Amino acid sequence: MKLIANCNYCKGPIKVSAFMIENRIELARKKGKEFELRCEKCGRKNDVHVDDVQAVDGLWVKIVGLFSILAAVLLTIFFWGFGFIALASFTIPILIVTTVNQNQRTKIKQFNLMYYDSKRPRK
Ligand SMILES: [Zn+2]
Image 1 (cartoon, rainbow, N blue to C red):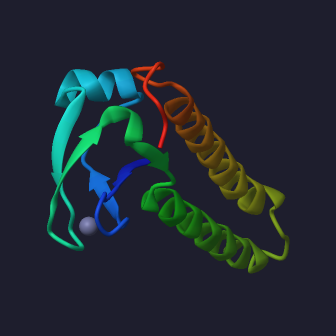
Image 2: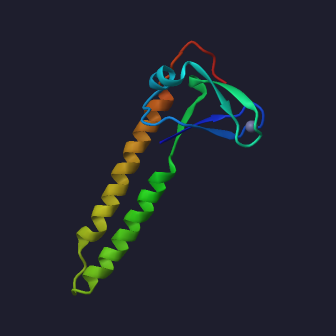
Image 3: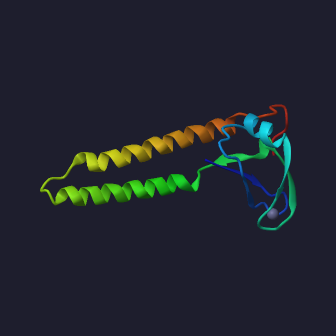
């Protein structure tokens, strides 16, 4: 899971560094209700409210997925040499990818659904 906010000036995404943050309440506790972020694209400073931060898919989910598929292919080729195709060599990595993805999706959904200030008007 990756946290991003949109730049007020160029609308580009700004990465919010937040390690081990699960929701906006934790983010507000760590960074404050509003914090300053500099846009990497246009270089302007933004005042970001925690409720404007969105959770999106992290890159590592894709990396895990890619490696698992690669491992599945390699294991299948390896077992193929023994004269049989091990079903487990293919299903286990797929299972890992599915679990990781589902976990991430749930986390992302939870983050995006819970607002710090529910009375604040949305953009
Ligand atoms: Zn910008």
